[in-house]
Image (cartoon, rainbow, N blue to C red; front, side, top):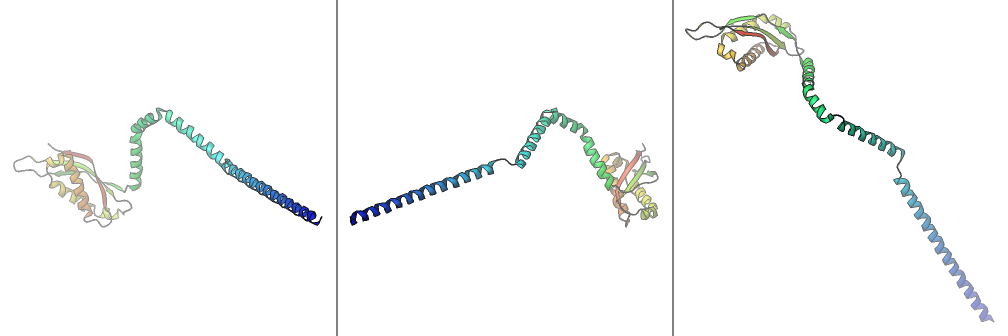
Length: 206
C-alpha cells in the first residue's frame, strides 16, 4: 500500500513537471510571436511614407512635368537657343556695357590735332587730322590732368611727327599709336593715369 501511494505521488509530480514545461514552452513561443509581430509592424511603420515624403514626391512630380513642358515647349531648346544666339548680342552687349559702366573712368576730349607726319626727301608733305578722347582710370583725380594738359598735347604731337602716313593707314599702326600715347602720358602722370585712348576722328591727307 505504501509503495502504491509513493508511485502515485511520483507520477503526479512527474505530470505536474510536464505541464509546467509545456506551459513554459507555450509562453516562450507566444512571447517570440509577439516580439516578431512588433518587429514587423515597426518595419512597416518605418517604410510607410511620411507627410514630408509625400510632399517631396509631389514637388518632384511637378518639377518633372515642368521640365517636360520646357523640353517639348518650344522648340524650346532650339528656339531658345537660336533666340539666345541672336539676342545673345544683347546678353554679351548688356553684360559688357554694364561692366564697362561700372569700370569706366572719366572721359576727356582734347582739342582737335592737325599735325605733319614724317615724309621722305622729295615727297609731298603729309599731315593727319584727328580728334582724341582719353579715358582716365576709375576714381583718379583729374586735376593733375588739367594742369598737365599742355604737356599731354605736346606728347601726342611729337608722337604724330614721328609717324609715317603708311604706318597710320594700317589698323595695327593706329593701335600702336594709341599704346604709345597712353604709355608716354602715364610716364609723367602721378595720379591722373590714362586707361584708354580713343580716336573719334582720324584723316590723313593725300
